Length: 420
Ligand SMILES: [Mn+2]
Image (cartoon, rainbow, N blue to C red; front, side):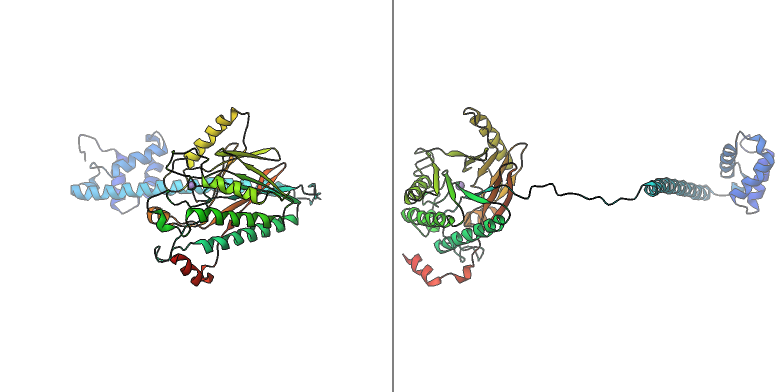
C-alpha cells in the first residue's frame, strides 16, 4: 500500500502490523531496529523516524481515524514526551546534587580533627576610664496635655516633668554605678540641646496647651535643672555643661531677633550663675547656635536641628546634608568633628555615616496633640546617654526612659494649678 506517493518500505509495513497487535512503541522499536537497524543513520534517528511514522497519516493504523482522533493521539504523545524530558531533567539535577554532596562529605572525612588549643586572654584587665555624655533636650517645660483632650493617649504637665527629672537621675545613676564596677568614670558632659522651655507664642493658640506662663517656665525649669546637676556631683568628680538654644525658646517672631535672644540661652546662663560656687562644674554656653565639645580628642558637634527641613519622622537626608555642610563650614576654623548631636525631632535615633555618627535625642512630653493628631506619632519620652572611650570613641549608649506612673500623680494639686 502506498499513500501520498511514498512507497511503503518493509519496515514501515511491519511496524504498522506490530502496532496493530497492540505492542508498545518501545517494543516495536526494539524489534524493528534489530531487523532493519542498518537502514538508519543511528539508533536515535531510527527512533525518531519510527515515532514520526507511527504518528503520521501514512501509517495505515492512523487511517480511518478522524482528524480530531489524530490530534488527540498526538497531544497524548507530546505530553508523554514532555514528561519524559522533565523526568530526565529531575534525574540529572538529583545526580548533580548528589555529586556535590558526596564531594563535600568526602572533603569533611578527609579533614583532620580539631586539636584543642589553649588561648590566653590578651586583653588588659585594667579597663581605661570612660566619660559619660548625657543629652538633654526638648523638655518643652510648661507643655500641658490632658487625657481628656487626647482620648487617653497622653497626659503631661509640670508635675510629670518634675518626676521625669527624678527618673532621669535614677536612670543615670543606675547606668553609671553599673559601669563603674568595670572601669573608672569621673566625668559627665551634659549637652543641653535646646527647647528647654515650651514658650507661649511659638504657634497660634499655644496658650491653651501650657500650664506655666513663660516667666514661670523659665524660673521653675532653672530650678529643676540646677537641682539635677547638683545631684550629679554624687556620681562624678567633674561635670561639663554645654548649651545650645532651640526654636521653642525664641523671643519674638521667627527671625525678628538674633538667635541668641532665646529663653534657652537665659536658662543656661541662669543655671551657670546659680551653681557658680561649685568647683565641680565647667560651662560652655555662648551666643552661638552651635558648640563643639571635645572629649579625649573626639569632637562632638551639637545644634538644635530646627533648621533641618523635615516632614514626619526623622529627615534622614536633611540630617545627612546638614552633617556634610557643617563639615565644610567648620573647616573654616580648622575643626573636624567626629560626632553630631541634635534634638528637635522627638525621635531618638542613631544614624551611621562614613566617618560621622549622628545622634538624635528624644523628648520629654511624648506624644503631643500636634504630633498625634497631625502625624499619628507618639514617642516614649527618652533622653540619650552614651560613653566615650579614649581609644574607641563612643562605645555603649543607653536610652533613659522618662516614664513616670501618672496614676500616682497628685490630682488635687493638679486641679488647683489648672484653676490658676
Ligand atoms: Mn525644636
